[in-house]
Picture (cartoon, rainbow, N blue to C red):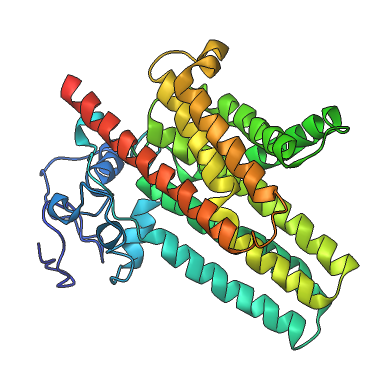
Length: 352
């Protein structure tokens, strides 16, 4: 599919050139704005079926990260999830997507962080400190969240909605955890911390996924990851500021560095798993609180609480190797959930 305008070689079956936007197939009739934008849903994933992987092999899933991508590809990815650009179920691919945009987002955030670091450490300009904290706290969580967004095969959640959940869900879950801390103030230990924070995030995730729109396991993963990303970023920003005010400068940078590196396997992965479990139990049915007592949900929630408790347990030699192990274990379960979500999409397509 070579474009006649810019000579760019496009994947098969696309209707627009991914580089210049030239439309390949014209119907010869006047098209309204709705039909024009709806066509994005047919190819917005940009990945031909033969390039996708059914099995969760890392060399396949991440094979497009280091390929060259046009700016137009990124722009079209960001328009999915609206009423005009959400594909029908029959058009959704149930094979493993190949995300790549998350890596670009991370590189951009890393460049911005380097700029703020230069302003603080070399020029000693205090005006750069807030930016350093914000970018340092949000860089990895947002990049990880974009990964979950790209893996959301139904493509039914817009990026605007995702950012809304990050900000509102993040702060509400933090406030809810403070309420539980106040209730458990005489019994604070790693296990009760895990219960308080994971239950707080679970409640906020429930509030969002009660919407009938979120009926897929992959939707729950994304919504949960959004709440977890907000929680992780806000918490990291708070700890970084505390380190800056109470300790020497090295502790400030170490706090941002380690919490950023471990955030994908902590709050983000745990909340994503909780969200996936809720949507797996809920399905197409209206949400009821009785669903939270089903084994399918409880086994995931208990696993998440145990992981969180182990993460906070002051075991000698636990850091960093124990946290790396817990992070890997969390992501193994995440990929199993992604596989279950893609299987769910495939089963629903067969019912049509």
